[in-house]
Picture 1: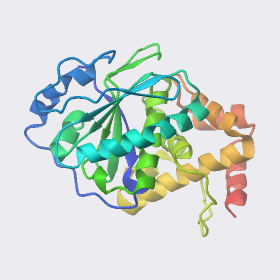
Picture 2 (picture 1 turned 60 degrees about the vertical axis):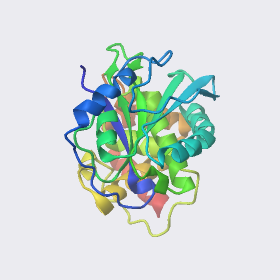
Picture 3 (picture 1 turned 90 degrees about the vertical axis):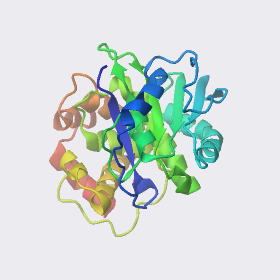
Length: 290
């Protein structure tokens, strides 16, 4: 089986730390029960005995069918009820930024245990700060289709505030929409920063932001806890700066140039799209934050 392609939402959206996600011996067994999810999804086949029957698909946005799947447990159905209420708005946010040329089949899986999450996300180990993950089991080499795609909500998603869950959904849906146009080696700081730009509601820049000495980098995403939270915030703030200074269309084009298959390095993409290199952008960003 092709190794899955993943993007995650950090729990920064809820500003709470999650207990460590454990790897259990039954991961392989649960992975088999979720095997139907790794195929394309025109219509779900027979439901594995460990999973509740998928809901009848919701239709939202540009005719997108959303299938909600509970893996059991007392909290998963209420979480999926909240997802059903919010996902239409989340899809609209993604369509407004990215357009409508992306998958019309969306699968959202709610897990009740760490082992279920590890199996559904095909993640033998997941950071304790992960709130959700978007998984694609395979991406067409031509970049036109991602098969077996799903958004997997981590356990304890029921503890998210209403606002946090809405942000998680929109963030993951952006990864869902942009998957086939995102290279495996795309700069994470830009993929996550743009996803947060799409997902977070417009708001004033938080006061007291430290003035940066450099643009965001992937090195910042290797930490955990407050360090990782700060990395997401910096990436989000840079994406906001680009959108406000150069326009939302320029931010989307920068993503495509710096993150797409055969992408340029970020500095080259910045010069081509924004007409400014990293040093000039850093000065502008500092002034914008100031």
